[in-house]
Image (cartoon, rainbow, N blue to C red; front, side, top):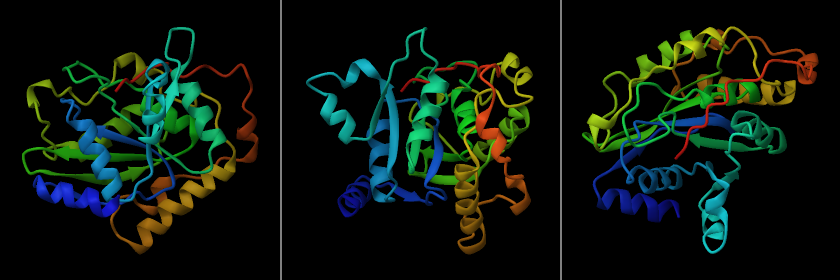
Length: 252
């Protein structure tokens, strides 16, 4: 599949760069302005040997397309108002030893005034890095860029994300691109942990992956001390009364 995907990308004039620095991550892709983004993303993942998964509404996994959707990396989630999208996705990370989930923060192909913050709280709650994926239709290049562990200060971390994407990407329909920002209310709630944090095993594993990538491959613009201290084991048993994360539901 890797060679076939690279052949197709070469045939249509695209190239993909980068590599996934951790075996557990939330990979965001921007901008998302066209239906073509999905097949292009699949070709990118296969060509870079990235076992990425994506989230879809549980109803699209019913017969007759359910099997195909799962083979393409889909994860079914119930996204009605009675289910917490962030908590469901964090639970997937708790169950899986290796999991990289792709999320479109814009949540739609149409222009919106804000990004949905679910991707951020999922990564923060699961203790995994956010990996910045990009697609540039003007230069016909896409791939994997910077990675970092979310600090819990969503305002500061969004500044970092904006800096990465500045002048880097051009969607197929640029007029549909959404500004890279979250609602002010999300920023106000970003002062601390808002969903149960997983244990130190994931924290240490993801940190070691990022540290190795930073030392040995030079492809990630993350200072060693930016990864922050490991959480103590007690964090794995956060009280049930902890405040719930903002339940933003980015959709494909």
